[in-house]
Length: 146
Image (cartoon, rainbow, N blue to C red):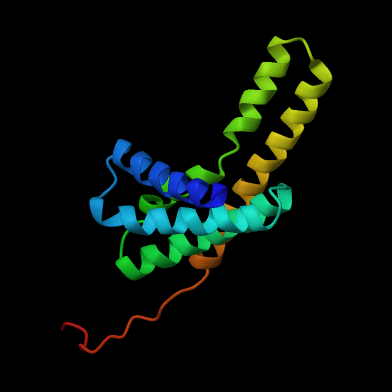
């Protein structure tokens, strides 16, 4: 039941973030499903740095693929779909430990959070690079103009 509630919350947060950013309405369902897939992979892989990398790569690739199919910009899907993977709790805990003068835990939480952010950044960069390297040949049925 807990995982089901997390999945519903993940999809809801993704859609509401898209609404907040005035994302086109026809992209909300796609971003919710992409965000859910990424979050499920993240949960199944154990919520570590490697899980951030693989889940971020999946989200990035699905956003790029969906953008190509729908003939839209990938950022229309990516900004909202990546929200469930953002390590906000890690950032919060890092600041909380600093405020409490617990510097050892703050450094540990900060390093883990920074590694997660870097893994997400790397994954999204790889996904974009993969799709930018793919060129679809344009079929030219018309002869050149004189």
